[in-house]
Length: 304
Image 1 (cartoon, rainbow, N blue to C red):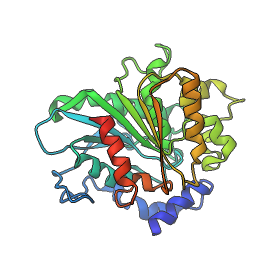
Image 2: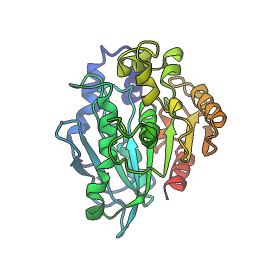
Image 3: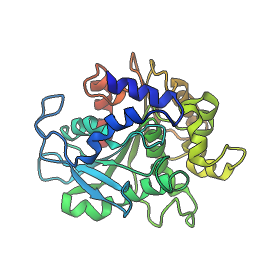
Image 4: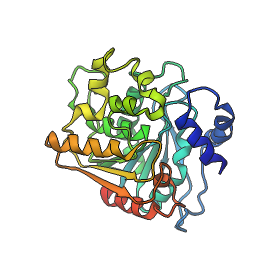
């Protein structure tokens, strides 16, 4: 209950005044392992995860979980949300990563610079996510990863980052956000994703934190939004699966609905929306929720 209350406070308040929640919630972040005994479904998990740095900064690392077997394993890049601020970290997605790994998927649960970290916001948050994804090339052989089957799964603000990193190859070849050789992403799953940064400001999502991330409003820095907002990059031309609970009061369902409409208008036929009845903002990432089996099946079907 305390965790749920803190999550709601994070997403409905300003950036200050949440240190107590952050301290309690992030105590797990210093640990490099999680329970290896079982997931919420009772499946036996291998030892792990393995924490691997993809850059020199303390926020630039990921946790790799490998399923049992010899591989090569499909990879799910797991990207946490939290309004792009550093009150929350990748520990928010530990349980979900365990559950997906138990289904035979390697999971690469990544951390990245967020507001409140040194040298955060545009463009560094985006650069970190791109670097984390591209780092899979350096660890694929050792860990038997199948780089032809890489899917991103992001929640909330992480949904923005997951779809964006799948779309960054559309950017100009000279754009640093693109990277010199972006790893191809086969598909993207957005769980209550913030997929239109400009609309998020209009709807008051995260109390307008997207403006802080982008260093201004769309009128002030239009180029930032043009290259960082998934809606502005349509058509992305890979399968995109939007999952959104109809009881979500933090990121309204209408955001996914509007994105789907924009994708269809742009000719992006590979975008689908699954509305999860009765699910709130966190049910879609919580393996103990009644709605999780539906969410998990969609993710597994996409990733395999």
